[in-house]
Amino acid sequence: MKLRFILLICVIPFFVKAQDEQDSSAVTTKKQKHENPRFAIAASGGLSWRLADVSPDENDLTKAYIKDLKSGNGFEISAKYFFNSKLGVGIKYNSHLSKVKYDNMYFSYNNQNYFGTVSDDISINTIAATFSGRFYTRQKTGYFTFDGGIGLMTYKDESKIATNKVNVKGNTLGFNVSAGVGVNITRNISLVIGFNFLNGTLSQYDVTENGIKERVTLNESEYQSLSHIDIFEGLVITF
Image (tube, rainbow, N blue to C red; front, side, top):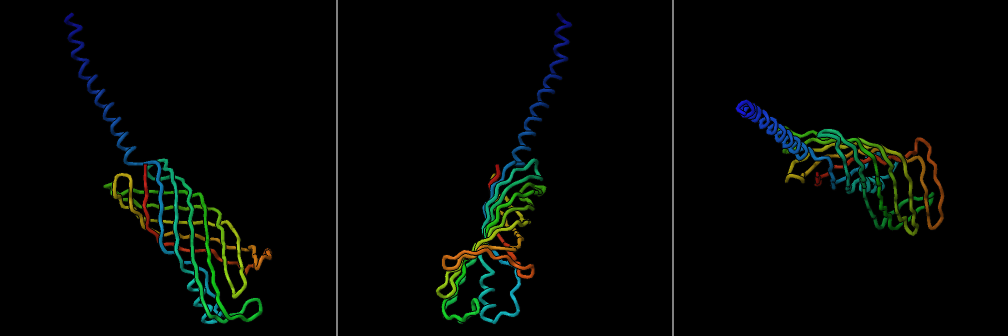
């Protein structure tokens, strides 16, 4: 009986230590899971600029019009899943929007001279699959993030040239990269600022003018760039 009692006293400390280590490991695992959330949903917006050059052959008024049309607004929504604290995959939707209208303008279109209103309402939308990276600061108060991906870019322009209504639609494959810096506001919400670069080129598109539709195929020297860069800020929710 004494021998059993002595053995029990000797075993209890080891049992208690093992239990403490198990509890500590569980807490550590739970803490790591909490500190490194797997899912991130983001929404952002800001300014956007198209990067295509303006032809030097255009007159000053046309150059001013195109320059105004190249700048606009951009917004983006994305969802990401991280395999660990640093690497993940995701999907995002990006939109560049620009709209310009000039009144009382002299211009040439289809070898004819016009006087009146010219307007364009352009949207360039991209939906892409992305590979994502996220690197936290040592204190876990913020992080650096980057994305790279490939996806479908669509182009739409609803324009009016004097009394002529012209709609242009096209699509192409494009790639995109982005980078930003996030600062934690709460446990699951952070503020992020950064930039996007999206690149794609139209080689053909459909034109509908006054109800008549035709397919336009461009020569290589006439390809239309859809490239644009965005400066954005937004919110990220993680869980």
